[in-house]
Length: 320
Ligand SMILES: NC(=O)c1ccc[n+]([C@@H]2O[C@H](COP(=O)([O-])OP(=O)(O)OC[C@H]3O[C@@H](n4cnc5c(N)ncnc54)[C@H](O)[C@@H]3O)[C@@H](O)[C@H]2O)c1
Ligand SMILES: OC[C@@H](O)C(O)[C@H](O)CO
Image (cartoon, rainbow, N blue to C red; front, side):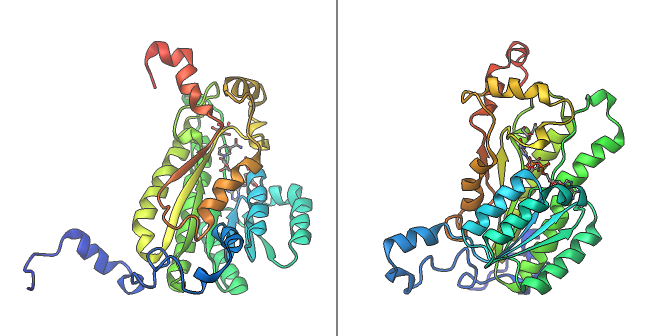
């Protein structure tokens, strides 16, 4: 029987937004049958490897940085066929040797570098077009481009605030939108992974980082919002939240002294190694292993958040 119910606002919206591009359940990689008849025949060991395989090509922002480079190595180890690194020249200058090593170790894959400041929307779109021509398809986006700033809130200049928010939030958004458009046009779906932080979940101690903490909390909401909007195009959107990792990001800006405090307050007594993020990155980027995961955040921090429980100032003031 035909319903005379008026369409809801949501129905109207769904009609307007690229309705013709929405994937049917059978074509959407997130709702299509999990296993094809051919796959049912493969050996258990082959299935185990396939479960965590990473398929296709990835754009990796901040890929010349510590976490980005380690993630690229893991993506290539798990089968990625192409990597396009988006980063700024200063980082390329120091990471060229590592990038050359990656190219040598994974000669079957294409590793390309693009000088892109993720704050520049035009440059991001331009680079995505170039990657599209080079790779034909873009299947993954991993956003590691990020900056930190340790300034007392009361002394912060507008430019300090904007620098952090522009790179960490707006830059991630520009890249996600440009690449989602491409994934939607391909009708293949894909995976987007943002880098949030434990700083998006709690307030760091002892360093003052209001802009950074705010930016990473925004990344968590960006993740959930885009996951909800883009699942009907087969696009999964997730994030990881690293704890204190032993990278150059945590060396400048007066942070050297804080490192001992962070390690001391962590029950494991140490900061994290970037390699320890690889498991979560591969799980979320893998089409099979991560298939029913979207809109989530994986915290990899060796329980650094225990700061929240142990910080005497916060306990006494009751401020959490
Ligand atoms: N190191 C940690 O403890 C830690 C913890 C939680 C989250 N994170 C996040 O992980 C990500 C990577 O951090 P990392 O430790 O590898 O730092 P890193 O400084 O080694 O890497 C960051 C990379 O981002 C690039 N970048 C900065 N601004 C950019 C811009 N405008 N456009 C393009 N690229 C830009 C840098 O050139 C650099 O290569 C960041 O988003 C950071 O906030 C780091
Ligand atoms: O909170 C952990 C990180 O996001 C970050 O490394 C740190 O706060 C930067 O000083």
